[in-house]
Length: 386
Image (tube, helix red, strand yellow):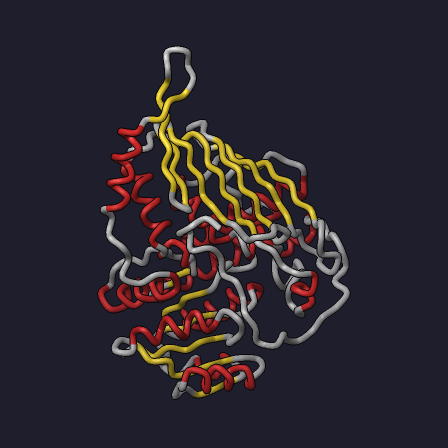
């Protein structure tokens, strides 16, 4: 029975708690930690947990915790993760992995030195439409991918950035490119690999209480000549998210759709119904995941700890995602066509270097300690297009 601690009991913590509770025969939540203990108490009562509450996570370092979920603001992820890894705990850390590539490297080194699991939350990989889309891509039925379109469209009200740590380059680390599109960027890297070049633009068009961007658009060039585009936004009504891959033989996407074309004698398209049917049959016969979302990823981590198997999303994956994000920020800030990978002497390798080079769109004018608990949105399930 693995002993679990939740570090940070804010809006995302229920996703972790509810996931762990699906595996009561494998793990038990024994501790909750929050800077505001009353928030942790609410979670303890909400879920009927027999867990101790602490305000300082360091009080848990000698408690023999097997696995921690870090659900805190990004700027503290690295220090907390390294401390627990060095204390002998396995670590799951919420997205984004850390505030800088330097911190990612520190976390990866600590996990390696202590032979512990480090997994970065990317729960959308554990959704049936995304997992099946990846398998269809890997099958080669759509052919070589020529163009990728990723829309990470969200909407957040003006007051969203009033929370004390949001909307600042120091505490939040960025806007939707970092904190919303992170899942889509992880998925894109998982499906297509790393692009070789990035050209990007960003702006703050609707939130004059935040230093960071609320909209960015990035263009990507891949080593094989394919192109991609990514929109990261908190100004899009409807919050529709999608992956669209245009292959040599067919278009496939999440939300799922397949369309294939063949050429008429004059070069114009005609539907290739035979190929569409073949791809659809392949998709339909793929098995569903036993668990989706956070539960799927936590099941994967528990299995890795229990059996010594690799996790699907490790520290290197989390670092690759942040590298692409920092490349977008570098391109948009410096007006450069950025070549990947970023080197350790790049200003965007460290948090300090990035903060010295990014634009500060507005001064954060309001800061509140906490919002009342309320509904949050965590994105489309990619099942049916809204």
